[in-house]
Image (cartoon, rainbow, N blue to C red; front, side):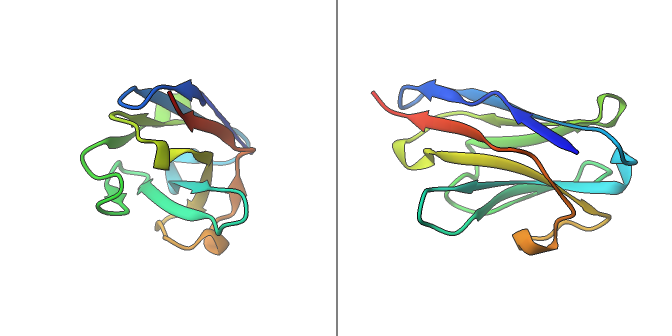
Length: 121
């Protein structure tokens, strides 16, 4: 299973660090992705990282502001979010997929419970 935490309320321009902790499977064999979802909209790919630490970002919305990293010894993946904008407001989910990452939520095997990020003044 996965547990995501670290969300909260932050002002525009602020930062948050999300964490995703895994248990019950061989974590280093899994790519981990972060997705976000606004109520009434589809779940959106944000960024993913392979078991060996290679990262893939979704593109302009987050490139240069978000950084993903992982620590396999701690079964953990982190999402550092800087220069946050109101449009980053969403529930953020982490998910794990065996071997290769994907931008498609349906291909992931494990999901965390989600953590709310609200960017507002």
